[in-house]
Each structure stands twice: as structure tokens, then as C-alpha cells.
Length: 522
Image (cartoon, rainbow, N blue to C red; front, side, top):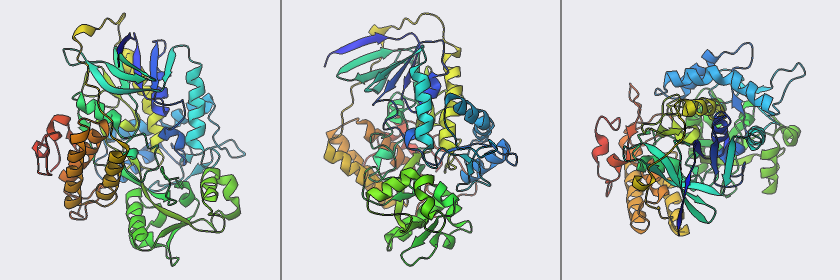
């Protein structure tokens, strides 16, 4: 396939979910090119978020209290500056989204309708139409982006690798745009590619999200942080669908209960907060119960006849599969939902590579630690998106004249066959899922090595290897990362920082240079 060259004198934003569009809306007046892998608002996690957006919006709440809940949920490794920065931006971020047209639910007095979700000390999750928050917020932001004169959007465009200068700065990306391969050169590149749920057989995310932003950054030499921490949502609807429909946490906030086949509220066996315990605890409880006869979310008493009006998305998902949640408990199981790890950044989105920023789920500021606090994801995308957009253009000069002749252009990565992708997703779900152990993680790394022989350098394999390798080397249980062979939590928490050079030579599951103190925590 012939390759074209395109020189863009402004920010290049890779990804068009809430994070990417929030970046682009804050880069004016610089001309900004946004790559959208599909049509705007389709198949991105932001649009599928049901619960809402967390912020200190009530008189009894404060950003400090929100930050404390964020830190406590993160199981000892949250970056406290990132948490403080995020939660202080919360109220203003929600207000700006409201001004853009996001139709948040309000009480008669004009205040926000707020839900309480797991690990929050009080109700602080602003919602839209019960469970339509992500879709409605993204629609408002998309409308703004489409009408912003400084933003150009390429649909059906996704990045396959990052282009670097001879000095090591990122100066563009190799882009598949419809049927063309284009070397897009830009003075600054912002990754906003979303998470990695599609690496797992059961996920609530669009299945096309496989950590590819993290992979192309790692291949370019960027530092990666905390990749082993993958959050599993406790209550995906167990209908055998791919992706799995989500039963929002707001249902439990409204009083829905988790029961086993005998009607026993089993989460209280593991935590005094029951259904509102941190997500990792609830997910493991649901996983265990699902394996021994089935787990169910029961909203018959708490919501009952109000279900269609209060939670229309969940109601439609259930009814389409022959389950009426007004009169029947809903079958649930955990599903890969959110990646706390990703490309290491500071609170302005700067990565360890000059010219490269990252934001949203593909980035890792450390704000989520080992376990994201419910409904902080939309807040992070919008609030940090604004910060990153402003930071990315702060140092830009005049005309951009890259040395295209001497640029380091990545090799076009192969794609996995359908059968090999299925094998990878099944292996990730089995061995890097809710419960992990050494034997399973070694088996998974062996599988990744075998698949790599047929599709060397496939981006999904790069991101999967980063997750699996670092999960193998973290010999403790912390937050979303649970090792049945190391169930204890170390007294002092430590984050993971690694890079591709330290993990790529792993074979047959032996320990590698990734055990060095400057790489991993154990």
C-alpha cells in the first residue's frame, strides 16, 4: 500500500472520545486534527458510561472529601497531587459540561440529582436520565467539536505507530485513514485512545479497545505505569453477549442487592459495606458466587416498577434477553471495565517522550491507584482533557517544518487473525482476570509468545504482554490485582514503572530484567 505524507501545523489528537474531544476543544486557536477510529460518539467507552460523573456538587461535600475517597479506594498507591488536582476541578468541569448542553438530572430547586456509588462517602455522582450520562455528555461535547472552526476530524482513522525525530521527540504518527496509509507529521501528539477491555473475553468496553495507545507509546520508548491494574466491573449482565451489557453501580446506590441462588446477600460475607464496598472486593465476591451457582442483582424492591424510567439502558438490555428486572433478579458476572494503568504522565499529560502527551484511560497519572473510584473516569477525561489541551499548545512555535526524510517511521504492525484474537482474549480472561496466580500468568505469557510468532509486534500482544508481565511480578494483592498465591498486601504500596525494552525479551515465563528496582515493585 503506498504511503502518503501529511504535515499538520498543530496538535494531533489520537482518539475522539470524551478525553480526546476535551483536549481538542481547548487547543484553540491552533488548528487541531482529531483521529476518530469510527464515527464520532460510536464505540468509545465514554459513550457507554452509565453511572455519571463524580464531583463535589452538594453543600455537605468538598473536593477534599472527594480526594480522600479517591485515595482510599486506590489501595495505597494513588498519586495524591493527581487526586487533589482532579477533585478540585470537579465542580467546574461539571458546570462547563452543563453549559455545553449536557442535560444533567436536577431537583425542583435546581440542584443536581446525585447518586451514591461504591466507596464514596456520600452521594456525589451527577447523572443524566438515570443511566444515560456518558451518551448525553459525549453528544454535547461532539456537538461543540463539530462546530469548532479550529478542529478537523478524520473518521475511520487510527494510529498504528508513532513517528520520532532523530533526537527522539515524537513528531507524528503512522495512520490508517480509510483505505490510505498516511504519515501524519505534527509538532505535538496527544494519545486519547481509551482502555484495554477488548483484550478480555468478557468486557463492558467496545471490543475494539485493546490498549493500542499504550502499545504504540511503549514501542516508541515511553515509560508505562501500573499496567497490571485492570478494574473488573462487578455487575456486567451475564447474557453471553460481547461486549457484556453493564448494570450500572447506581442501581446498588439506589438499594439493589446482590444475592446468590438462595437469596443470600453474599457480599456482606467479605465486607461490612456489602454492595457498596470498593469495586475490587465486590467483583471478587461476585466472581466467587458466579462460579458456585450464579450471582444476581436484585432490584425488585429497590426500584421495581420505576425501572424503565430510572434506568432505561439497563432495562432495555434485560428485556431484550427475556429478563424483566422489575420482577426478576438479573444474572451478573464481573467483566473487564477500566484500565488504571497506561502511559505514564504528569498532571499535565506530559509523557516521558518529548512531544507526546496522553490523557484519559490510556494515560496513567496515578490518580486511580490500584482501584478506580466509581464515576471518576468521565471526570478524569473531561477535566484532564482541558488541562492537557492547554498544556500541549503552550510551547508551540510558528511553522512546523519536520525533517521527514530522516524521521524514524515505525514498521506497520500486523493484525491478529480472528482465531488468534479469540485465543488471546480467552487467555487474558482466564489468567489475568479477577483472580490471578503465577501458573496462570506464565501460561498466558507462553500463549502471547506463541501468538507473536505468527503476528510479531501486533499491538494487542504488546499491551497484553505489558499487563501480564507486570501482574506476574507484583507478588502481592492490591486493589484490582488479586493473586490467590500472594493474597496479602504489602505494608507499603509502590507503583509499577516499566518500559518495553524491559519486558519484550521475556520467554517461557522466566523472570526478566523487569524485576530490577527501577522497573517494578518486586
